[in-house]
Image (cartoon, rainbow, N blue to C red; front, side, top):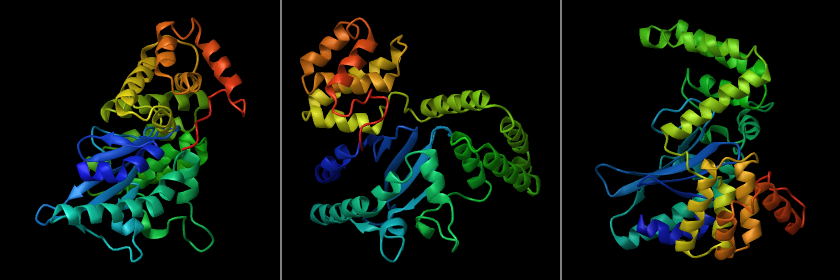
Amino acid sequence: MKSWNRVARPFLQLHGFKQYGKDGFGRMTHDQVFQFFIFNVHRHTHTFTLDISIRPMYCENQNYLVLRPGNRLGKLATKNGLDTWWPSDTDEVTEKSLTEVLRLLQESVLPFYNNTRTSEEIIKSYQKNFFGKNKFGDRVSWGSPGYECFDFGYIYLRAGAYEKALKEFERCSKFVSESNYESERQRNEKYLKLIELCKTGKQDVNAYLQNQIQNSLSNLKLADWLFADIYKAIARYFPAAVEQAEVEHLLQSINQADITVGKDQLARSILIMADGNLHELRRLFDTGFLGDPRDVIMIATGKTNNKSDSSAPFDY
């Protein structure tokens, strides 16, 4: 992992990734999709690979990460699509392997991530064209039978495509009702409730999905994570690691503040106002966001060339 951080740190920061657990890295998109990869070390040989995946927080998530939609790095990124394991017998060999893995992440995995940042983008990448092919072909596994429709029911709900969500949950219900396993048939009660949810209004659906997001963030210990574009901006404004840690901690504290503006919007505005000056950033917090966080947003808006109010994410 030390070798990986040395090789990949600029790439990771440039695209808003940070370490997750002891052997994973991820980023949270502005639409609550967690995009991550985990080092998978072979049990019996000196080799390793990466498991690549995305998990929308508005889908159902327990206290462990499901590795779908996604695939292993070799299947997703190599020319022949084989399940490739890279050697790590010595430090020199490991460094060479990690350099190749980083290249594949940049060339093949990052495009997958950049095309699945929102529910709408996930749907576009998933849908098949006239020839029966989707954007990533068979390089991405979208889920196992019975669970693919479960995830995409939520994804369509998030995108506001309630009729399509209804059809996905109906597929789930049909799948489990025909199962030979009692445990699977018992899940049908949940699917029937989701079918009814699809028939309600936008307000009920959004409230349900927001509850899903909070549960997922809590289960996966991601509640304090900032969005990827904010992490990228922190690294750009504050190159020193010790300063980055303090800035991240201060911006995370906004989640506990009693404010009426968007918390991610305020975080972006604070970074624009501080412009790399840690003392100025501290002052914004010491003064309670100048007494009114709306003033911070207005001043930051005046500083940007495109007059963005920081509600939209930075580029990442």
